[in-house]
Amino acid sequence: MPNEPTPHAAVLVLPRLRVQNANAISSPLTWGFPSITAFTGLMTALARRMGPDAGIRFHSVGVVCHGFEAQVTQGGYTRSFCLTRNPVLQDGSTAAIVEEGRVHLDITLVFEVTLSTALLDDAKRAQCAADVGECVAAMRIAGGSVMPPLPGALRRPPRAKLTLLGGDVEAQTKQFKRLSRQWLPGFALVSRDDLLQNRLEELRANAPAEATPPTLLDAWLDLSRINHRASLKAVPDAIAGEPTEVVEWATDRRSGWLVPIPVGYAALSDLYPPGAVAGARDTAVPFRFVESVYSIGQWVSPHRLADMTQLTWRPDYAPASGLYRCVNAFQAPTTDSYTPISFEE
Image (cartoon, rainbow, N blue to C red):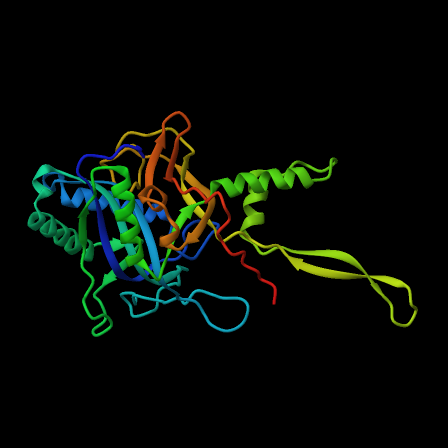
């Protein structure tokens, strides 16, 4: 993102969207909150529906989660997805069950946009926000349906809002701080690639010399789980009077709410021309076989973010490496203002 203010830069906020049955299987290795690529895909689809005549251009999207209700079985340590068998086949028999994960979400979407000169008028800008809100209400978000607000749940139904940003960076930062407090309580998903690299260096520094050096996959798995480590501690024996060694278990602490997330796709094949691959979903666009790319994300309260670039994700493409990736510019504070989360009882 550029450091200089963008002409007619604005923030489009779609507050408190209730999404029913969104896709909870975000990748072959992760489940839970939908992949961030689902929201950048929504941004692309929204831009196409609005069209160039709408006078609004989308650049990046951020998501703040207020509620998360996974459709899984309750009770016990192991959870399973609540599956359905429908629709009924033509002969009245039931169809085979296809495993799919679903989740109900309560989210706020924040888009970084630029506006045409025609939308500098307050009335036209409000009408544009209303048009975007109506358009999103008829779309799918991560495969889920957008539901209307519950009656009586809020004093005022949430409405889309398009805010024109100030002319300098300092004014834009103040506006973001004021807006971010409207997204509480909630948590924003940000990228923590730096923690993945730091963990890899720690694993390599502590690995035995004769062992195979750890890889990024080892570091990613280490950050994706709760690690319990055993250590020997000398304690005095009350009967023998001599110290004895006992095993003590400790759980690694994390500097925040870290989660493994998919952040894009890497090319597995050349880019084929439209219609060259049989069975492709869209025969009007080029086709390429890809696999998921993973990283580490962190859920952060919006009031801890400094500006829009730390909240939003933008799609990025590297033609040389064939990497399609969502990029977020979050930078952890220099002073550790996060309270470590302990999993010890």
